[in-house]
Amino acid sequence: MPSNSGPQSVHAYTNDALGVADATELAQRVKRGDVSAEELADAAIARARSVEPLIGGLVADNFEGAMETARRLDRRQAGTESGFFSGVPTVIKDNTDIEGLATRHGSKAVPESAAATTSPFALQLLDQGFVCLGKSALPEFGFNATTEPAHQPPSRNPWNLDYSTGASSGGSAALVAAGVVPVAHANDGGGSIRIPAACCGLVGLKPSRGRLIDNDAARTLPVNILVDSIVSRSVRDTAHFMEQAERYFHRSSLPALGSNEGPSGKALTIGLVLDSINGHATDDDTRRTVENTARKLEKLGHRIVPMEVPVAASFPEDFALYWAFLAFGVKANGRKLINPGFDKQQVDGLTNGLASKFRQQFYRFPAALWRLHRSHQHYARAMTRFDAVLTPVLGHTTPPIGHLSPNVPFATLFERLTRYVGFTPLANATGAPAISLPMGMSRDNLPISVQFMGRHGGERTLLDIAYTLEAEAPWPALHQAGAGTQAPVTAGTIL
Image (cartoon, rainbow, N blue to C red; front, side):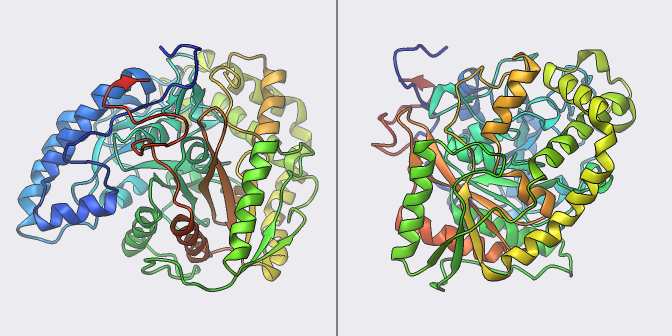
């Protein structure tokens, strides 16, 4: 375990088949025959074994299945056409079914039983040729903003092992940041792609509602706040993933994305929001990072305009009640919704607290639901003057392990979460796209990220901004000398 003597980081980068390449480069190498899918899978498995005892990103491995899939892909390479990312290793978050693997949703309340089928989005992702190494960790049902399940060790941030990975896709983010895989599955119901990407220094794009295939849970919600995607280390990996996903499925009501290979150079009008509508001021380091990003964009010819948060003042309370409604629904109907063996007596303190909050305030729910539905129109009207909005991802820098633990008394935990997560839920309720980009570092050797929100269907604009900032001020990675305050480390080694 890490000591308290100072920032301690870990990564798995080494001189193997994966190297320091992103997913796009690895896929190109496989197609050229420079490296095989089997070699990539073998390297990723070795990396996982070296750092997993320290970061806790995986909850179940599929190593034998991954090697079989990789060998099958290698046999196909010389014959039929395969997916864009053919042979690239990845992981699937443990709230998404993969046939033959258990789906535990980060909860002791869910028994370990193998899924009979693969979920619709997982099929869309795996169609691109990815090789699944296993299932990544999340907090119970994705409700928390840190990946610290009450029944198992937490996922730790590879940049500083004393700190959180964020959530709910925290296991995926830890594995990508540590170099085990170049991209990983993530999903987002209130910030669960963007928050762990922000904590771990990654690119995290939450797509527009309906851009990618909905899983069953999303289809049943009164307000669909859930979307799936990936976290990555490069903008082009995210852009190529979105392009290839569109080849598998495209909703005609949204503008096509097509190919997006770099910045367009187009001048944009970008709104600027520094403080959350929930009344909590952004901390100094985060505010400084957002302001520095705004200045970079202005120097590049973009117009930055301060703006009010484009939503009704009731939004924070309405979304919190919706969050509580989801917890109440899971606890009350877990056997039907999740698994016949669901045991509601085993849910953690956060799920229990949220469910109790809903029971106490259920009479407010119809009006809150009506306002959440209308948030789409409010946001769309406000965005007619802007191409995008720049905000923090989080209200303050990444907290240490334990700060947001589900074992913290609920009233304290809820207050801490509302201070921390004030910017990301708006994109979920409105259905707008949003992206997290790492643009600074804290004194604790942790990334600080900014968020850009776009118009509905406006992922191309967000990727344009991301490409521009990546080229202008490339963000550090753990394998680079001088990243944060630490020198690089070899596989399985802690500084």
